[in-house]
Image 1 (cartoon, rainbow, N blue to C red):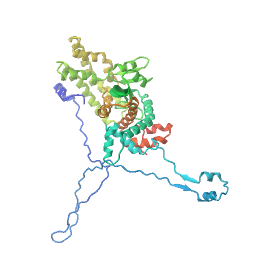
Image 2: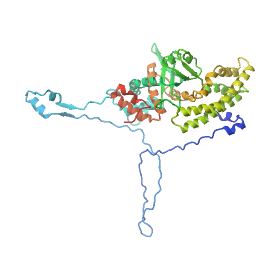
Image 3: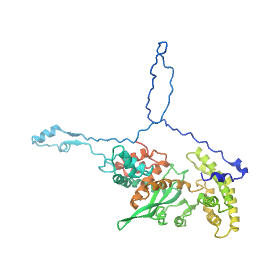
Image 4: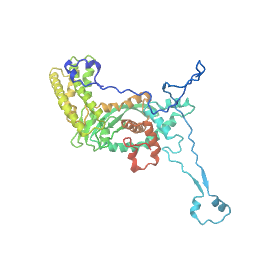
Amino acid sequence: MLITQSESKQTDTNSDDNKPAKPKRERRIVIPDNLEVRTIIHEPESITCGCGCQMKQIGEDVQDKLGLIPACFYRERHIYPKYACQHCQRQSFSKQPIDDTQNQNHRLIQAKVPAGVIVKSIATAELLAHIIISKFADHQPLYRQSLIYGRSGVHLSDSTMADWVGRCGVALEPLVKRLHELLLTQPILHADETPVNILKFNNNKGKLKQGYVWAYLTPQHCQSYGGFKAVVYDFAESRRNEHPKAFLDKWQGQLICDDYNGYKCLFNQKQAVIEVGCMAHARRKFHELHIKGQSLVAHEALALFQKLYAVECQIDALFEKNETPSPRVATTVVAIRQQHAKPIAKALYRWLQEKRLGTTKNASITKAIEYCLKRWQALTRYLEDGSLPIDNNWAENQMRPWALGRKNWLFAGSLKSGQRAAVIMSLIQSARLNGLDVYAYLSDVLKRLPTHKDKDIDELLPHVWKMQ
């Protein structure tokens, strides 16, 4: 939630009637019904009554407890029986000529070794999926996983697992390339970027250099055909504008982003990309001044921002009722925003203009005001389109796994390893967006990928995938 408790107290008392009712939180199921049930019956020490009769059961009390079995390794032994034709063998020993050439080719029959994502590896697809998810979804560095597995008597070095992760990243790359292609067919995209350190070697000395990972994704309330939901990460060694320009080459649509100059090269007539501003970034400027006590009027702007977001809460409730948004829902969103949010936006714009006349050029509040005024058209574009969100927070949420991960694994070992990590993270996060069990999805894909036909690659994408 963008609005803090302290700010909510500063709103007008007259606006209480317009506040939407807070949705009730769903009760979380601690023990889900799909778990295996292990029944333990506790019989009394004796069911003999004091009178000498045997008691009969008249009911029972049931108490459910949640148990856990730690990660359990097992040995998967593959046996390939060999079959031979005894008749052909006798002819071979007797040195008699064999006329049937087909029999010569079938004297010995044995099943072929199934193709694996890593040739001749001892790791199953399930183990590879577990290692990858532990690293990129649960933020467990490989050396920690090695220590955890060692407690079970399995000794896997972090270098071995690093090699497995790298090979899986290469194998999964075609899936992310296909996701990239589909992403560029969408009319609305989010974009954001965050720094990630890269280890660079010069004269055998390692030095950390700041790289960047870029995220491009579909809106949270997706209205595209087929309900396409995906996020694709692009790992780059810099923050230069050449990276979003290359990723979004020839793409046309509306791009929701912050005010970073790296995106400005896209907003021209040739590229035909329309900028959609982030109201959260505009609000954040005033919020920082307010909590630091650097402005006496920042709270006035925050009150207006809060009213804009109160309208969005009503719209979120509308989307909750319509899990698959339709064009009619988008029309309803526009009507709500035009009726309730647009007057508030006009009041905010007048406030910005009035306060700008009374502030000095280098004041902090002036910079916050000018940030909004210069980008006002991009910031308020969402009022005219029900498919657009009010801010870019959805993209920032998809950056959280990287922010949490880099606190644990600290840096990428090289540019290539960062790019492979971006491939894996793209599939993991896209699977999450589509409500999939990430472990089930990734292990199944790693099993099917070696023998899967290229023309049917869409079947393995998160928004299409089904368990076989």
